[in-house]
Length: 249
Image (cartoon, rainbow, N blue to C red; front, side, top):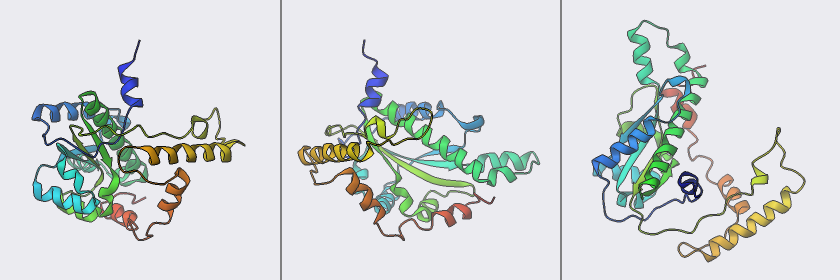
């Protein structure tokens, strides 16, 4: 018997071409409900979700990300790591908020935000929708903070562009399981070079034969390209995170 949840998870693909059809308020509520019931560290619920519907703000985000295709999506979420709400609770109760400013609590809020983001994507795909999770909002987090009026102890982590898929891209091959799933200890093994070579060839064949946006690329080439990008891109993330009140100790 087919497991529909496993089927959905293993068939995920990023969607960047959408039908001209917005999500309904009910659909948005269902997606937020799905996020709200995700696992959360110490039940502290350290994230917030912003539905961006203002065309002017969406255009600004499209410029920040460099992806104008997001303007054609049916709905856009920004997922925010959030300790501000818990900071207000601490202040109201006369409690020292020292721990909220720690690296530990930054990571906890990042975990909460990421897990809620994945819940939204899985829920969306179960509803016949598709989308892309966008880390590219980090290209200019200061502008994102300004655009969304984010207070201290918050940080914009991810965008999610969702909508009705206009196409269905071929499923992109992932790394062989032996390259990331180990038993008891980390071990790439003696066959790493050969397995990487085989995966590079598999991915190259995929890119060359797919129906849209074909190109010549391997996984190794992709990683090298990432490492050779402009060193100034996102170089201020650490300082902006600290400006927002995180990682004080």
